[in-house]
Length: 260
Image 1: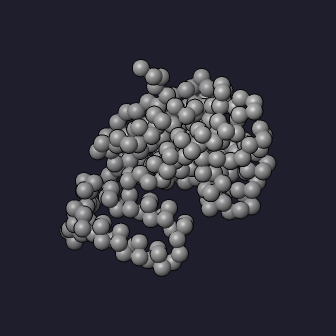
Image 2: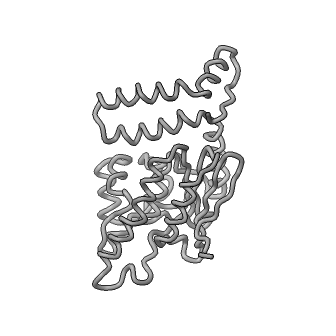
Image 3: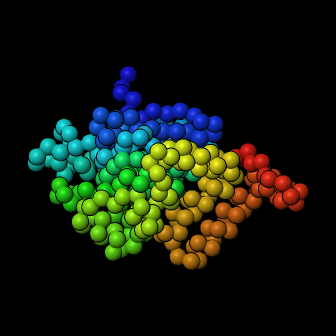
């Protein structure tokens, strides 16, 4: 049996995925992303996903040990790993039908930064940091960072992160709009789980359509956005959760969504 680089457990309707290479600060070889993708492909009845690396680190980046960075072939090996494993997993995250929360303690560097920010809600500890470390080793951002960062923080700040390669700690990340919330380190895991549980109690179809709609809006014009909203509203409006929401509103009570 291969090493369990990602641990999975259910907490109610939340699928908790924990990166499990603490001795390497959760540095991620392609195999780790393969295991992550396998869980994303088999959500079962989970209605939200929480991705975390535990208390010490989120993910210190791709694992550069071994043949992946061998002199003379590093670029070709990195290209193969990105197109064959890392990028398809990032695309799965973008297209997931349920909300994603990330809980970040310690470093989220390189592709770990991309993974953390791919969540709908990124909760960071005060001493945690985001790092685009590529410039320090003569490489370029990957995992979607060059697409994601200008949209989250603007061109100037994205340029600062990528070209200077300096740590962006939790408080600054929150002030820049990169993450949802910065909290004391000790409460990050609990607060992130509570948020994931709140999302899991929501109208799952509508939430999934919203997150996909947000992603699509970053690449479409206004008319396309209007058309997509109309189509999504038809799909959501025909769901059992929408019917429950309407009845609950009329009856002046809290809706009890079932994710249907």
